[in-house]
Image (cartoon, rainbow, N blue to C red):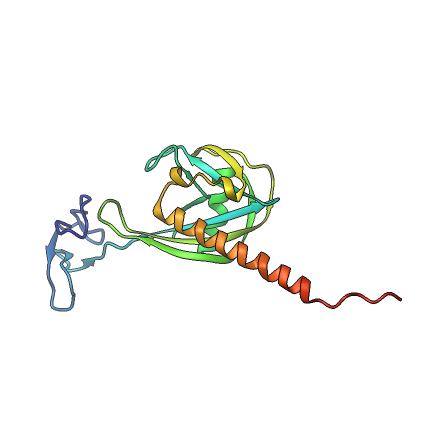
Length: 195
């Protein structure tokens, strides 16, 4: 759109009938929308959904270095665009296998993160814990390398996106909380009786 909400080139033609799209403020809308001059269909420009997993094995976290733009050469966890015929969990599992060659199960939700336009299309990122990873991590065609990092060695200054930072911070916080609860429970457990 020509407004400050979207600085990328907006679509010019209606995906329904091929008619020209014009930006208009409609009575039923709170901001200008792209509307087809022929069929009057509104074309909503919505964020793209990304799904990913944070995988831990042996106390180490798997990150990959991006081989594609945007942010080529920076580090992130396996993630990618969700296809129309899959769930977020299925997308996260598929992207993990494509990007780093591991089979995983999408476990508990780490969090949901967003990045609005205008620099790029808006993104909504859904991040899960990757559970039961099998296979050997290797770089797929969208990764320069895949590497396991100790939590203290995460390359914070070279992470790909603000959503990557937020998800990793939330994951680390949850990981610490889980370990504290486990340690507290172990201290409170009564001693085992012999016999």
